[in-house]
Length: 181
Image (cartoon, rainbow, N blue to C red; front, side, top):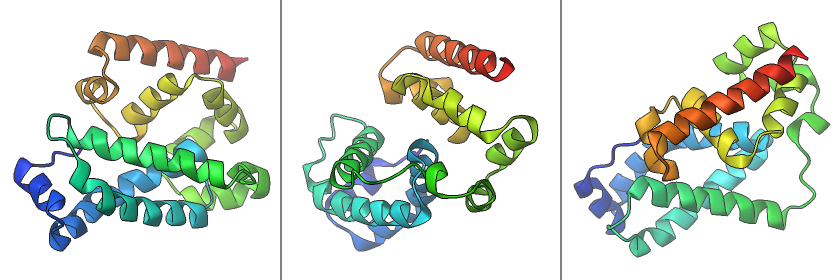
């Protein structure tokens, strides 16, 4: 997904502000979409979480171990930060519990949601996605929202490409069955 060059990563580790600004520009849209789609946060909460995440990233860059993939390291920080966010804020409701349907659609304005909305009711899709185990949900998200290749997903999740294809196929079948019933 992100192809960070080694020299760029070194600049980040050395706390080069220009490199970090580039890092922000390269990643903010992807991380924003991930948080909105995965956790159904309000726009305000998503922006707060991202702001704190980038501060945390700035702080933790010096502890990056070059033996591991940098992208995986950054995604781990984001996911752990999101978990911490929910621990601190147990009163967060799912977005669809406190916003009406039209507001939700206007906020997301994504092509995928609009395409899905034409064929199926959002609530059914949401419930179908929520019924998946976390890794199946992530595979669908990475493949169709982040538009990652099977190879990228397999590297990110530490599983074979065949396992990714199999998990994706099973998850899509499960969603299709739920949508048809």
